[in-house]
Image 1 (cartoon, rainbow, N blue to C red):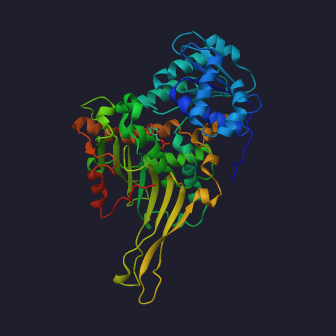
Image 2: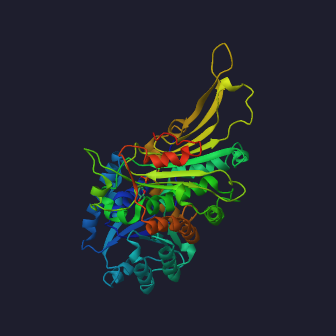
Image 3: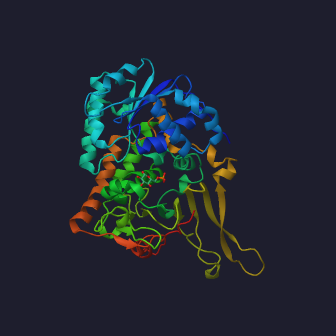
Length: 484
Ligand code: BG6
């Protein structure tokens, strides 16, 4: 199925950190795909800005290489790459000084949407915001896009919010969590609020527990410098996992609009109970003969940073009291597989007797790969003699059901960048949401630091530390297998 393309107004996107890794891997290829889809007509312009001395021609070569490396649609590249590059220019600029700012200001054109993408470390947010105002580049129609990590704790997140608020209204600030741009993550809302079937059962009366797994098979690779200061808790739990939890647990918003959705997400985060230390497990992967362990990858023998975290979370409200949410995420696990499993309670009484066995429904939403939903239902095992029950899946893989193939499904960044241009903040985090998430995660991290709790080592290619399995076993439950 070919996705419908909604036209957007002419826009300028200025990428600070235009030669950085995120620009190369994600932002520029995403823009090119939108160009191919016809959404960058009307003379839209992309201006890369960074410290490195280069001219526009050299930057276009950089963009060409990045598109060819990270976009696999060769047919589109052959046809459109040159015209796309014509819409790109470059300015050498010093975020902390004045070099390059007048030149950049001279390129601005009135009457079009202007978005500044802060694809730089948070230490530069204040400098960039201030200079944009000093050089008169920001007006009411200006938007800024900021990436995670948005702070490393509540205090730093508040400071960043305060710096940005000095120059921009909340309605102009787009805090990216790329998980919200994923098609399957948006589908969580469609599944929950587009169907009558689930809502009446969506509470602790019918749901035993919910499991959220975001498992990666890769290690930290070249990002060790950043990751070792963050760890799985700051890198994944505070943001991506938290967003998944919100979408699965929130009350139905009155409408699909930015503040209605974000108000409901915020209520979930605020209702989270503090987590006792016994309900958290942190791990770190060991190496194998072929693959380096975490410590070797980050080149720090005695690092205490976690590459895995599992948490049993409880939401203290009427809908969810008594239904735990088990969340786990980690690197170098058995497979790359992310899913949410909603495990319903057993039927209150079995009319079929003990021999029929114990069964229950599980609704699984596969986020990636092999995106789809599966509902486990119990039926009679075929054949004569007695009533034996068996669980079978009603399985819907989106690619099959929609006649789609993976190349048609837009990357999260494509969707999110176009939402910035359209001025739609629904899939972006609001400042209070980010702060609330830190307010919940900070005490967990602090207790590790205070008690000097070291992560438990786990084998590369495993499901994480055994203690994470115990987190569920002791409640008479078990994790689903990590498999795509
Ligand atoms: C990023 C994290 O935000 O998300 C990475 O910093 C992680 O450590 C990545 O690997 C996972 O994203 P995705 O889209 O590959 O699931």
